Length: 486
Ligand code: NAD
Image (tube, rainbow, N blue to C red; front, side, top):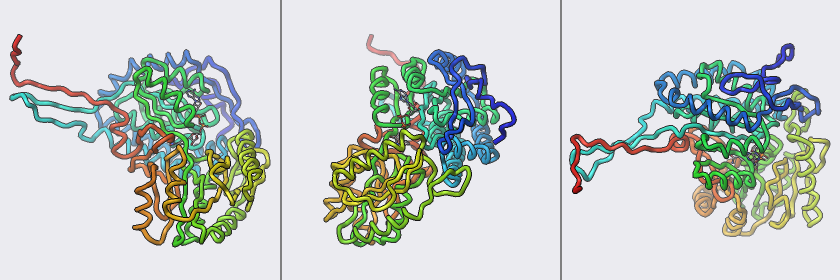
């Protein structure tokens, strides 16, 4: 990270191009140390209006840029992500507390999203339907929505923003991105620089760092025709209500409380490894985190021992200074919330098997046994490095426990029998199920998304992106004009 010059975002906002910001300058604090590592300008609701007006004026021009030129810009952006890996990963580590492999994985996944998006504009984008009227042709094509508002969270701030930004741009839309203030440099400012340097015309992309008031202004702006939101279920519901009232398209990718089922015939070495990865990766701050370990009573003791042994081996520390498995949580408040959920569950009879200690914003990898469905660590999305284990007696019990949660994002099933696992998968009300693997899976070419309180059935990735970021238009053509009865 070059700290010898003042970064452009300390005074400027990216409103189609870098401009002096008129909002508030806020400190960017490193969660591991509490050190102020930069400053950035926040946007205001008036900036949302400026961005939306500029985007509206630019969108037709951008839509008409030939597909190969759009693809070229997106490929250049992909290349710049790789070229600037050290800088981007450095900010991801210091700004968000990401360990190096998580930052590298996020960057690689974002690169894949850019490459995938570059291939979208060259797809055939319509169908021709027959007509009941002789001499008539029905063309049905996908057309851009106009301006798309993207609201992203802080946990995977680059990937979760750009998985919407790249395909929305590819399909001919302008985009206004509102990153979370806790991750607005790596998940906003650096991406603005990349798209600007890749040759995206001014006005097509805007980045407005800010809190809920900026998000609300974006959702409510009449010139913003779609909102793609990734974040909590509570905020998602509110955004969904506003979009419903305004008849605005909305994609909501929300929270999760994902289960890993371990059947009596599972390979416990593999299952406990998957369980540890699914619960502790990025300190558990992942929507697909394994939040509930459901283990058959015959193997529960051994599974808990193996999982606890893995947890005890994990080192917690400052990922900028040393090689660690777990960095800090995003802030002290979040770490205190995790502590509170654990303490309340222990008071209700749960048993602490490993970890359990907080040190400022750091939290040990924690395993809790004797968990029941009414305990907060089981019922709520913890978003911290906690693995609650609950025992079941039959496959039917396991399915009913999974489906008890209002969330339905991801699940994992471990069994020696693929057929048995597939039968269980067919009964789960969950958007993504991984057999003999863990819950945190994301591949750019496969549509991603949840059921129930985890979203409104929007899907990201692969072929889903074309439908998600466009609407359709029917144009019919009569070879010769037609006479009606009057
Ligand atoms: P959050 O909902 O508090 O914030 C997400 C974004 O919404 C931020 O940019 C925030 O500033 C903005 N925001 C907050 N209030 C708003 C409002 N009233 N109007 C408009 N925008 C508003 O979520 P968070 O705490 O940052 O992220 C964690 C949550 O996100 C967890 O529940 C997690 O499961 C979920 N998540 C889901 C996915 C997924 O793909 N399903 C991925 C990552 C995170």
